[in-house]
Length: 377
Image (tube, rainbow, N blue to C red; front, side, top):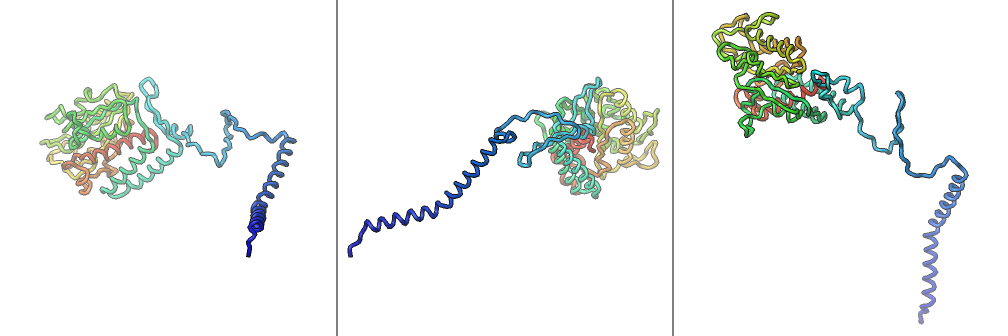
């Protein structure tokens, strides 16, 4: 049988055309329909004046009334919230100089971040209610870090003077390489970044002069330790007044005339800071709890033997009377080294923090200082 290749080719060509029509026909019909709709739309547009061409336009700044808000497309990205006037600044405590010039006030804290900080402050209050423990200290430390990281506040125009004993000096901390130790002061500054920081901490320093070592008394040497040039003074002392061994130790009395003993010299020191340094903010840090005892046998102006709380309570009372701010480690149980687990983890010896302890202590003091100035305590 002879095969007719021309007929086969013609048949295949016809079949291919039929397939193309079947496949493309619906698309062509849809195209014609869309084209017809498009032509009708353009005809209607040309006959109307209220249908503008779609072109990008510049949107000028608008002045809004008290009750007006700009409309925002759901598809547009939402800009970060900005500080709301009257919310953040109304609670904040700006730092001013003696002439009333504002040296610092919180900036770049959004309303959203402020709400986060307030939430963390409330969370921290609940942690303070825990029993004194290592877990309590570490949980507070974690919240402190979150608050500082969210706020991101620095104090580039502010000078600070830290006055205290060996804990302020940094005994037990790492060497700086410059003949000093890294203490909580360094970690406070790491977060808040002050213009200048003075560390007037010295081992053995105490509030009062007990006649044997007047060079260690903060009250006795206040003219050298308190600086007119600073905006903030942080005082952290009292443990050595409690621990110092004397044959007879004068506890003192708080009133407007007595300057003897611990309470009398503490009162004179606080009133000195209040009256002679009016442009200076003062923070009083109470000592963290410990399990030491005062071995002195005889006490003047005290019935029995005072405990550490008896040395911290007058600081809090006088600070409140003088308008100072208190960072209360003692009564909150933060960094309680009468707890063995805290002692083992955070101390370099029986009382001084190790580097981790200084970091935790400095973070907490930095957070407390910042919250005070933000008005979010």
